[in-house]
Length: 184
Image (cartoon, rainbow, N blue to C red; front, side):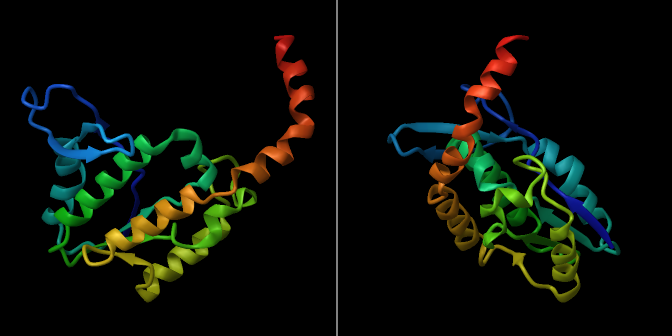
């Protein structure tokens, strides 16, 4: 078994979709503007999809990293949408490969608690046991049938994240932090 953790690399943006051969999906943002987000199809095909298809004797387990809600709050909606488009496209492209499964844990409360992270994206080792157990028991699987519900729940959790409680916890240390780094 080969476990791959895919963080969604290969996303690009172009104002001229006719110029390159990438796969484009139009997105309507909350401000009702239309934008084109490119998924670097060539990168994903050559480095992941083709490798999975060429090796049907190897079982691939893709774990979608459980970044903290705070991380998604900090990077904004566009980054999140790009990441989700990458995942959905990859899940769709590998839907007929019996040797590939995707696992996700963003529908759990784990990502709500910043204490579960060393920083905003590197989670503690305690989730590794859950990930391995899920692969063993075939739970927390994301596929074409449930990916929309999974990513919608993830988006709702991010949008409803209580950022104000984080701000209140940081506030007492703000002046001390600023004084320290104003000297440098």
